[in-house]
View 1 (cartoon, rainbow, N blue to C red):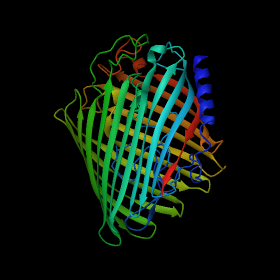
View 2: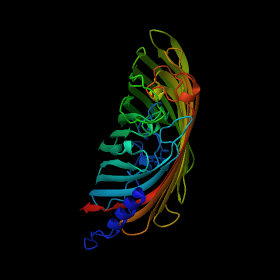
View 3: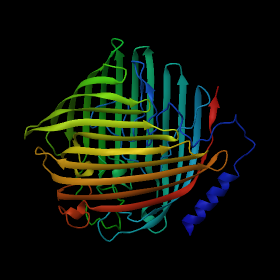
View 4: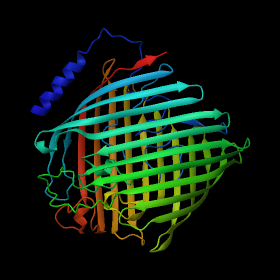
Length: 477
């Protein structure tokens, strides 16, 4: 009752916010801006240095960084870092979302699940800048939560998200870009990890910093240089598990990791539809309680435009993992398919690289299948997005842990503009995770009371969210 009353009261306040302040008319803030990327949805097509437009990138990957293993965390229930259409060279959009969420497994446990209703307040701000040869998109928000039953979990900042992307065309043939994505959660560790693996309810955060450089050497040949620094942190003693099913914590955060990657490659246009790609990637993996690892990968492949709106790209090759304990050869690959439709876009991707198993630690061979369907123009003011993601993580022989985990995450979100500055938002997220092996000393503690058993890993969760979002675009001309 308290949570519902708070949500209704806040919604009424939003509806009567000053109507006198009437800035220049703007399109509905719920519609993604063409030509500007946003987290959690396909990144719109961009102009490559060779003059050939690149297709939108499916949700979860970075369009300007093609190194396997450089991914973003899976989508959460709702993505409030959307980009409203910019009406001038500089646009600032403050927003506030008031939502009610039902969580059928608050503590992400295998048995004895506990459900709860959660009232959420998400203030945020989005900055856009557009100049000839330069674009900037930066957004930040955080979520305060009030639990109806598990009141000890109330917090003013249970979630935080930051996304920034900058693109600068120094010359007609030289383009630089920088992307940074920060995700923090005290609720669902899977929404803050790159692999999407859940290690229970614990404080976890990740950051992906990825610069890239593209240089057109000849009318047909482009040289690419990109890098990425990915870090993940897990705090098993944050106190959020008070009174939960988490019976103990080890106190060791062996899931903490720092991964540095750099890649270079050449794209050579053979025909107007076909481009050949050759690339080399190097990775330095520093995982707590694991030996330092070095990763070398050679990839070849290409991009083929089947139709003006359908593009397929793929590269693959051997990957060499070197540690003081073992030497392994595994495949390294990435593949993307994108299709632009009259009502939106569709995209799928596949990625395979050496990484980690999130809060369970250890060096692992990760495979990720993902994609999304985005509907933006079917009905005025309506935006729909379906983003499934399936990951397979298998620890390598060089790892001191032994865990094989399969994780499925499906996120469906909807946004409908009901007034000039107010939109209805709703979402559903399904998490299903199974695993086997020994996760000794994992950051989630002794979930389920049997450390090393499969029920440390097996998790199911359903999240249903609905509410209102207020956004007020301020355009500077």
